Amino acid sequence: MDEVFKALADPSRRALLDSLNARNGQTLRELCAGLDMARQSVSKHLAVLEDARLVTTRKHGREKHHFLNAEPINAIADRWISRYHRGHAQALADLKTALESPAMTDTAFVYTTYIKTTPEELWRALTDPAFTRRYWGLALETDWTPGAPMTWNHGSVQIADPEQVVLAAEPPNRLSYTWHTFTSEFAAVHGLDPDEVAAWAREQRSKVTFVIEPHGDDTVKLTVTHDDFPPGSAVRDAVSGGWPELVASLKTLLETGEPLPSPA
View (cartoon, rainbow, N blue to C red):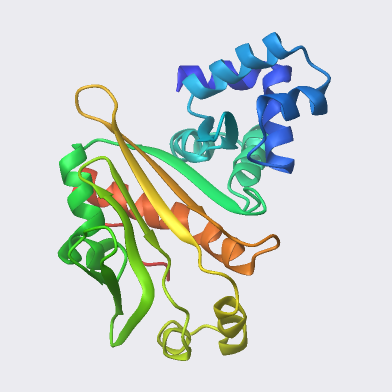
């Protein structure tokens, strides 16, 4: 946590976070232009923010895009914010809210967390129906080979579609698949507005990618990228609110043996 407090102490780094909160996924060039800061200074500040895990990056062609990561702020808030008077903690609470907002980019959502587990166990948690049912409430049925079809089992609802396929499976490092098909049955079992779900179904197919990287002796870095959304996507807005809670439940299950309790 020391690195997080150090990173947040500098006004220039806070300005970079503000810029990414306003428009996430910016390149170094875009950040420099928007903040009127020298390229070298921005690079140094971004390195500090990456070391503190407040910013995560993704390569796209020859460019590197920068994204906010809410996980360190969540950890600080969970440990400290309840111990202080609300007035003294308001700035931190506001920043936590900002970093958790769903406006990642117009076409992508990126979220990074660190889990005390092994790459192999995390891979199993992402692919084994016995695991996914515990923290996700669904089972993904497939043989996990590229091009293989996937069936999504949401309780009593089974969603099969030729366009639901595995895109990449490189255990235990990288997993990618197309997102599921939105149906009226899916809306009913989850108590969702059927008109809203029908609007989601009219959008182009999105995809999710999990990148698993060792981090030290007993920790794994997990980066979730959900992208290929059309500009202004309502699906992106919906999953941006769901992924942080889902990943937190996955992390809690692997570290404690129990997922997060369901909200009342």
